[in-house]
Amino acid sequence: DCNGDWGGNAVIDECGVCGGDNSSCTGCTDENACNYEGATIEDGSCEYEISQLVDCDNVCLDGGVFYQFNITDTWGDGMCCSNGEGYYSISVDGDEMFVGSDFGEEAYHEFCASSDVCVQLTIVSDNYPREQSWNMIANGVNIGSGEGFDDTYHFGLCTAGCIEETACNFDEDANIDDGSCTVNDECGICGGEGIVEGDCDCDGNQLDVLGVCGGECTA
Image (cartoon, rainbow, N blue to C red; front, side, top):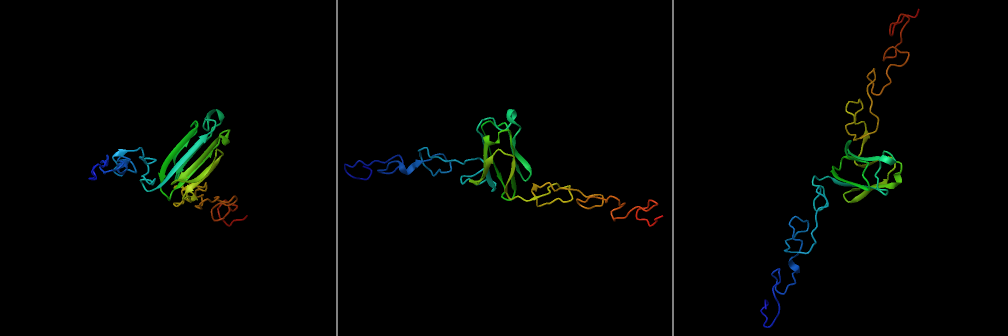
C-alpha cells in the first residue's frame, strides 16, 4: 500500500495523504469566504461578511461604528396610513439617513458612522404604538430598544446646542439642535429683548418733552 506495507490497505486520499480520510483538505473552498484556508473539498462551512459595510471581523470598512436598526409591527401595517401618521427617522449629526412609516411587518437599516458623531432616532407614534418594537445595535451590542411611542433617542457622542451657523449662539461643538438658536436684537445682544419699553435707545435713555432721545428738557 501507500505506506509500503505488504498486504496493507492504506491508500492516498483526495488530499494526497496516505491513509487519510480527506479531512485535511475538507472545508470552505470559496476564496472569497472569511474562513477560506485553502481547502479543496467543500463541506458547506463557508462564512461571509454579514454586510458589505464590514469586514470578516464585523468591523466597518471605514473604521466607524457598525449600526443596525430593526423595527417590526405585529399587525403588519407599519406606522401609517389608515391608523395614523407615525414614522421613524434616523439622523447622523443632523443629516437624515433613513425614514420610514409604511414598512409593513418589518424594516431594517444598517450603516457605519464615526465614533465621534451623534446618531439620533426619532419615533412619532401612530394610533397603535404598542404594535411596534425596535432595537438599535452598535458593533454587535444592543444599545437601545423600545416601542412605537413618541420619543427621541441619542446614541454615540452627542452634544446639545445651537447648530444653525447663522445664529448668534452657534455652537461649533454641538451636533444636536436643542432649540436654543437665537439672533441678535436691535441692540446687538444675542437673544436680547431689544429696547426696553419706554426707552428710546439701547442705553436706557428716554425721550424728553421735546422728543429728543436722552434730552434734558423737562418742561
